[in-house]
Length: 247
Image (cartoon, rainbow, N blue to C red; front, side, top):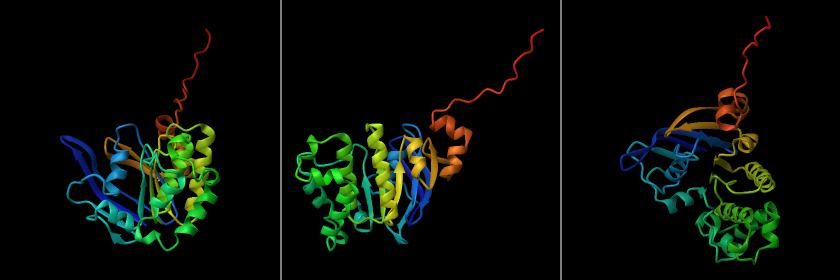
């Protein structure tokens, strides 16, 4: 569904991404794990057309090359980004934010049906449909951000740190909703520092360090890898040193 190759991004002399390649299959959740500053956000922005890349990149959605398209045309091609910090319109209501998400031509014919699907996915939004978004909790605002992106009828959904700042209960609720989004046929590329929760719902994952993909595999394999567990799941190495015998 999503195929990316040769993405390199630099900010002045700083090389944020160096020849990154990855893919996401139809109705698959793929997570990108990495430390702060590893290049995760730059990667999502590059795919969405929000930052300039060095020559050589190739990005396709459902076989269509979108490498040279501007950001608004990339949305029309079926790719939507939920940015870090949510990017909602705080002075507008939930309903108004969702309506703005349905602006792309590809989304207009089934706008009412899609809105009903999103309100079923996030029942809290139905309860707060006329509420101004800036007066809502962080978790509810994240639901609005995801709902607005889904209103564009994407084939691929990019999410940048969706659990950031949320309570554990809200994180579980949000990640459960993402599984339902996958079940609807949408592919998800997820950047997350909450490795435990993201690997629990992901099919596969990639590891990124200093702007390069340095590893990857099935989610179950990554969860079982001792190096991944130490680096991303907060587990300390277990000492196997044989204790000394008493003289």
